Length: 587
Ligand code: ARG
Image (cartoon, rainbow, N blue to C red; front, side):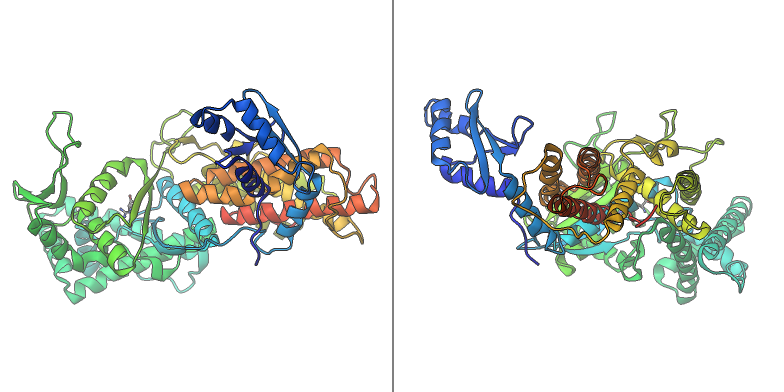
């Protein structure tokens, strides 16, 4: 494991030494890099910027092994061209490392990330998609950088709605019995249809039968009091739902570990104390019987303050009490220094109030960062929230199945023109899963977080444009080139000059480290997605302009080009893996 100094880091250092200030280096289309830090320094030290720039050029060892040329341009910018040898050498160092030269953070912290939080006894819908996909990518990226990541699936597994369900199950004890033959995906579907049936049946009785209603309300009290029989029934709902959740997550190719599922019920024992602490410290006050926290800047339309209600007047605890208790657990017991919540943007106010309350109570200190990572809504082509034709919310599984089906058609079509022999039927089915699920994940992750986006499967599985399929094909194509290279091996040749398309590809390959650093700094996976797309596009241009196998170039050129191919493939594969997307060897 050897982290590699990227070209931009090396140049930044070099120019900083010559300038004695931050050169503010960035990529440029005039040269490879442009530094405009001269301007600020000239202003601060009252010098002529062009003269200062010329002095820096003097001080830089031009024509050396790193910098091939430096020029002053405009009011005092420095245009810097790196040497071809430096590009190839840096890439060779990346290629020699399993981590492609990406360093592990020197001082990793502990991040608790709250994501993929469906609700017990309820169908998962498109709203649960984004939290799962974005959260999973962030977990992978943060872990890759060496952060200790604790995953928390804050599932909705507690609350008054369970009274009715449990009471019905007590009165109809066989409703959750399983068929002997259930397994895998079918088991998940069977579980959900049992839960749905039970929900509907209990609702009907609840609405029609006053006595059942009374018995159900009594059940809620028993549940909250921890009555063993009631808890055992409740547990059956949780277990049944987990079978369903797991089948959906399998389909989504997202790993959910049982020990990380700590739902709302997990904080039950803390609720009373949380309220007591808030009330004693005066952070929360009683208002019409309810325990409330007020904020100067949170007011309703009528101008009246809207409080965060921690405990209702009837004594019941709500969503906020649970989240506040979870913060206490995550900071005091799990020692988190960063708390992330991947939850849709409609809950922004909730988190703002919860975080502020936790700060006032001292549960969140200055050492802890708490961040809501909000995401937008999935829209239909009509620009309205994505619904079925009959106006219901889409079931997540239906959506996933449809994506796989579409992908299958695309692969079949492409398979007909296959150069290396067609895929078998089984291979097509496997690829369809990787492409279809990849398409959904990529469409989600390539959109900047806060934005709503149109759920358009045609676009998502398109071979052209910014899609996962495009990237997966780019990867498979490179792998095929490498297979067809015969005996030639990928070998870096720093002594060879590079063609423009080779330089462009090389410079981009070298940006992998900085791209990942940017993603984990702002928690925005779309920066990685757009990097990978740019990389695949640069590869396409390179492959158009620089023959690798046919017409056969000189042996050393061929080896160097294979080297670029190989590193591009590995970078694409690693980057896609961090987004949770598979890159099959053949497509
Ligand atoms: N279960 C909730 C929902 O489906 C999301 C939970 C978000 N996490 C949290 N800590 N509040 O909307």
